[in-house]
Length: 132
Image (cartoon, rainbow, N blue to C red; front, side, top):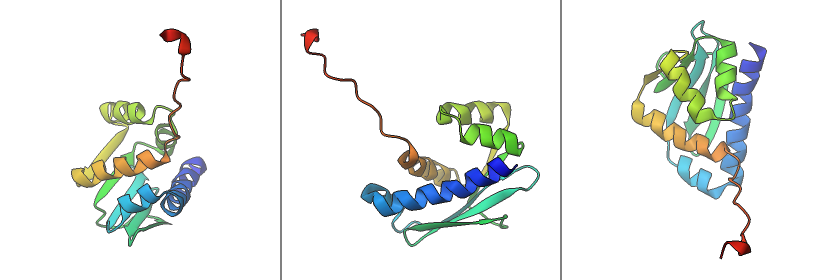
């Protein structure tokens, strides 16, 4: 449970850093007003507020978020959110119903674009002069 809570708190810190240091990320969130939460079925979770080009979060849940990611339990949530193949892990979790998404589908799609800013840059293969 503590790992899950820490991961959610750290998620806010990483996004704050990206917004401050990455102009593309700052443009992506500019003017966005969004409230969402990531939680377990048992009600453990965190609420995230994106407003005025900044993100903040608080422990606990609100009544009317625009969308919610609800994991079966904290262990599943941690495993899925910290998976190296995060997109595939999300899809598998949805199929197994270890993750249920409620709310505004367009906001969820926008959020997926935001999380792309947290991915490490892709390495490009070195130029192979012998190929020609």
